[in-house]
Length: 142
Image (spheres, rainbow, N blue to C red):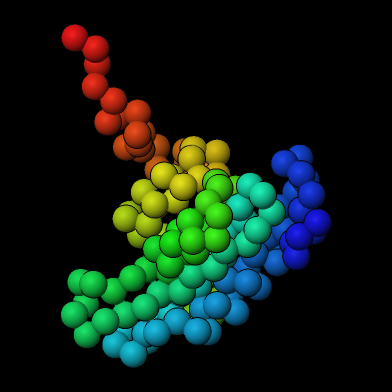
């Protein structure tokens, strides 16, 4: 059993707990330029929870989105697949990830990964239909 109380794939996602984790880590975001803090929490298929927050830079283009940090934490703590993700803004309200981060979530969670959005829980298939993936990199046999 994990901190979220999830013991198997058939158990419901504890969205309240994921949102609390995301809100807590959002408080540690480094956003001195935009003052727009973001936090994210992801449930991994083995029950772990991985976190990320945005980290800005004076060279704006090299700022890191919260989801980038979370995906780095996913891989640095053992890998796996994301099952569910909650991303929040500075008020702890659900936030839709940017396009770059949607692609990261697809790559690390796949089409059935669930995402909490401002309009409810959606699969990545709903959030990013016709996504580019590893399948698109396969070359047809000659």
